[in-house]
Length: 361
Image (cartoon, rainbow, N blue to C red; front, side):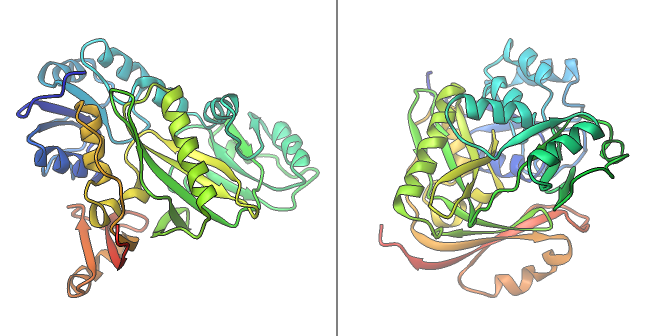
């Protein structure tokens, strides 16, 4: 792939905070950006050159985006696959639509991972209450019932503990009568994630694994370094690179893992995009995950992933954004707000990264 020349335009489907940070990174490398997003004055549009206000599957809007862009990417994994495929016939789309197909359905995702030799939690499809009862019996009454599609930040989930026999009538209806998946509990010690990248030339890069803590189903903190051994960190990077290769991927991916007592790993999920648990890279690395993604899709060399500082990234949820002035008074904090006018419970308003000791790298 010939590197995209400066002054080219990159299309971004989705106008949230991830699109915003991608647009900012693109501007630093001399590129323009066009956002396709149905919500007017979205966070990404505040820093992009242009916004097309239309649905993600609007045929005319997709053609307009393709006509004005040299390459198109996306900031979230629920982009309609049919629209992405139609767009790919007109302009390069990275990551490839195949990655969307895999990541959008939790069942397909786990089958894909197991099929390439990467272990996950045990799982079972659930389409009705009888199947739920059977699956729970198989998993000794425990599990997390999830919608196969569209769930994020803890939405579309229900936890079962020590539930056997009957009493499940109406559960699937309460979950929306949509395809579901029951995942067995995993006796994990901690959760980690790896932000990895694959260039158009097949080159690979990965950042240090982050140790993640969730609160109410939403990522609360990502801490570097993670409390894992070198072999576990290497296994996480290797798994991420295998996924990238199997998908013929171009761009940045987030891969979430459960770490078991013996240091072995199970993949929890993959996100074919820049990832919340990689926000620390903008404060503690020379090249952030956002610049890395732009480099990859533009055909530029992948950047250096070395971490210069230990750090903790923390999300600001809802009214926590009111902490911003106090955070700015602290010398070891890098703050990033997303330009959202209204704070609501559970809404990500920004994040900050607290820098610790230099790594000496």
